Amino acid sequence: MDKRMLELKENVQNEDGGINMCGAVDQMIAEGMERGLEQGMERGLKQGMERVAQEKVWGIRNMIEVCQELGGTYDNTQFQVEMRYHLSQEDAGKYMKQYWK
Image 1 (cartoon, one colour):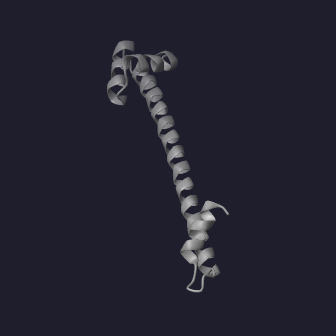
Image 2 (image 1 turned 45 degrees about the vertical axis):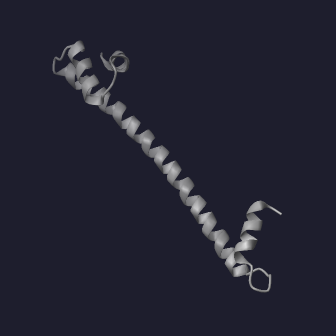
Image 3 (image 1 turned 135 degrees about the vertical axis):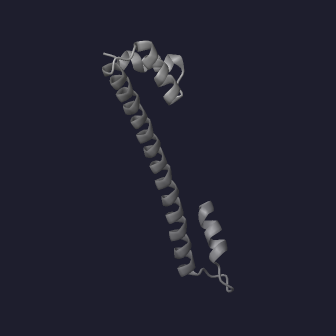
């Protein structure tokens, strides 16, 4: 017998040693809902983090383009990207190479 079934059996046995099927079904439903909620939250968190990362890249790209359009220098714009987005010089440089036209 599966370990989970043994735990379930212990939790829903009645005084006569039989199994309270309503209790067993209720417990299985509750466990399934809990697992589903956990998985849904994990997926939602992952998708949320991906969205934040994507929005950050859009923000960096827009900042670089606007600074360039307003006559900002390459070095000053890179410095601003580093400061505003808490990036290393190397990481900001990668964005600059990609989005500075």
